[in-house]
Image 1 (cartoon, rainbow, N blue to C red):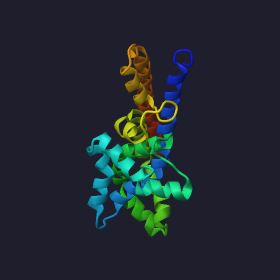
Image 2 (cartoon, rainbow, N blue to C red):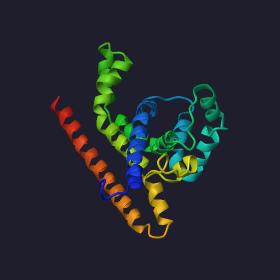
Image 3 (cartoon, rainbow, N blue to C red):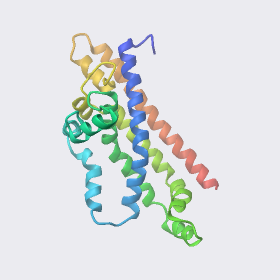
Image 4 (cartoon, helix red, strand yellow):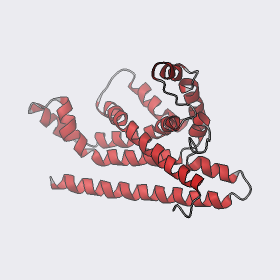
Length: 232
């Protein structure tokens, strides 16, 4: 791959993988918590939380990126706080690309995990509770293993969304080669310059290959987990 791609193209591929993986892993604990909350608890404001979680799916990605810039930019309330107190800068940095991709992929992750949790028979959880298990222990030993295929599916969906995210990312962190230029941004750059068709095609093929590999990996992991659960 190193001979087929130029150094700049390889950097864009590697950065996309790092950004997508980091966004997926950073979103996972919050995704599981929010999915469980929406699936198993009734509380005031539940519909509002559900709407906020799914808002990035409805809003144009550019709007989401602009809102991230307003809130997490150097002059935004959250961004200024992070910079002044912790020295963390997100706008126009690869860490900001992680945030943008995580926000865009979060609804897909939550939805997949929520559906999986809702499919778990509550009688099994109640039975564990009557035997003296705490709610946390019931979740860790009963709910979590049974909804593991959904968690894996949510992780893959979040990763795939992060790999293909463009609008929110380029609005929030721009298109800086070596820093924030992910695969979609690099493809867009190639389409804007004369003679860039070959580079755009190479990166497009890699993007398609990575997406297909992620889907196959998701199916394989889900089957393996289901076989293990069935054998218990």
